[in-house]
Length: 307
Figure 1: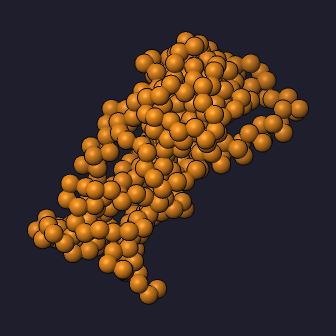
Figure 2: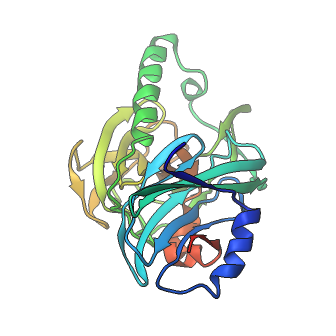
Figure 3: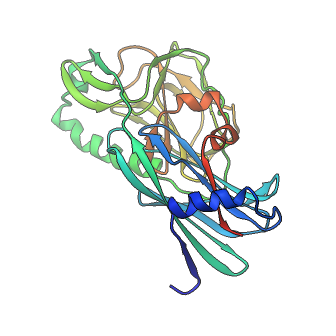
């Protein structure tokens, strides 16, 4: 295709990375991505250059994520957070594609990320029987809510409102981690898609990232729920709330109180379920509370794609 330069990932990029260490600082454009990563865990990507570039995006798991261009230490940079959902993704090699325009020319950089299996425990819970086998009269409601929430967590906007590390939504300890295989009343019901925090009913819940509220509601399984879009496919989810203090369309500051924790929906007791969706993939949010985008990028591989 005219105007597109195809850079072969992996072998080409590793070779280019070696050259980059001695390349002239004023001219290089590079991508940063992981060689391999564990399923369920969030990873960082970046595109950086000493010269201005436009229309950056990254394609991962068949989703195109539009990125911002921001001032960087050595010119310009675009940041992204990505990951894979333990329920849906199997170990293997997956394509990762960067695109950008520079000096009027469109560039395409194709990479590969090896996703590795991660062992997650199993968890047995006792809940109200109707939360395992819902009454038939509730099925239409559940299906409607599933469509609404799927659309909310796949929200894609360009402006980056998230900054790292995220603020903790509550101060309580983790009581149930991401990735646990949930068995309710002896019936296997998939994987835990978020992180549960200890939080008595009425505990103030804060937004880990700035963003915009895209959905609120009282849902059958999740109870009182809030979805906040923070840009570049980063969407936060809050479940089992007793009170919701925001409405759809509200702009939210990082650390702002969005409601109060509770025990609504399918629960064994009061707590806050916090979920993080990256480009539609539920990931483990817990490690992000202890790190930053720059720290994550230091663990990735950097390679020149344009001298």
